[in-house]
Image 1 (tube, rainbow, N blue to C red):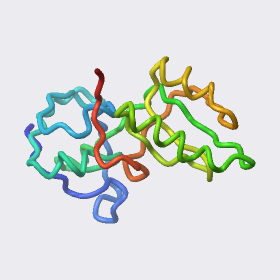
Image 2: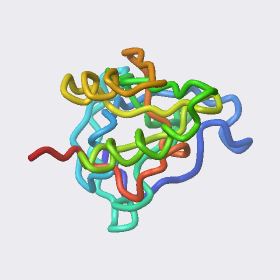
Image 3: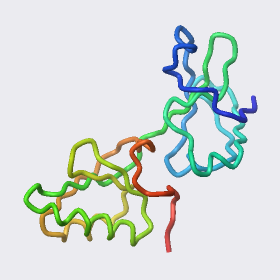
Length: 159
């Protein structure tokens, strides 16, 4: 099966009552145009998106195809991430945290609570963030929510 466009969201009313067969996508694959995947039920899926995916990305529950009573949807798998918390007594550290993460070309996401941010895990980043006064970190396996991204682009990037 070849999927070439996003048909909606698995939670859309038009898909109620249909079985959802998930296709796992890692966070750093979400902005790629071409994929060859296997759904959770073992169906081979080819994904060939147009250039709009380079800025939009694949998101959790995006519907890639409908076949009979089954919807094939995206599942963004959890990844190791750093949850950064800025102490409420040190709000000025928000700029420092965002600068340091951006300076390393790392993706940045809003956290669930005020004063929290999320970035994919790497050890040097975690060490650096833990050295900042008024900043604490927690390493967790969580799915990254691209609707909460702060970065203009989300790519795996290293020097």
